[in-house]
Image (cartoon, rainbow, N blue to C red; front, side):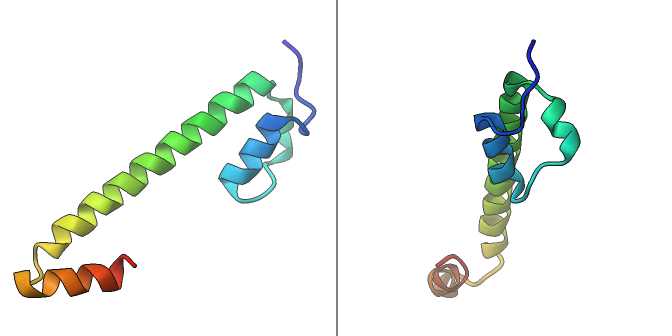
Length: 77
């Protein structure tokens, strides 16, 4: 296995997913390992977003039926 230099697509993907430069220790990961980490981060983010969406929809059930449409539009533009 070759070490990643930190400049490959895996490093760019990590930067994008983390929203900042990855820690220096991540440069020791191979491109394949970085790609696995990027994929795991994306799946976790998608899972959390889905869970938040479901929780928001469940919370809207507490809003009177006539007000749900306007409240949904205000909250989820």
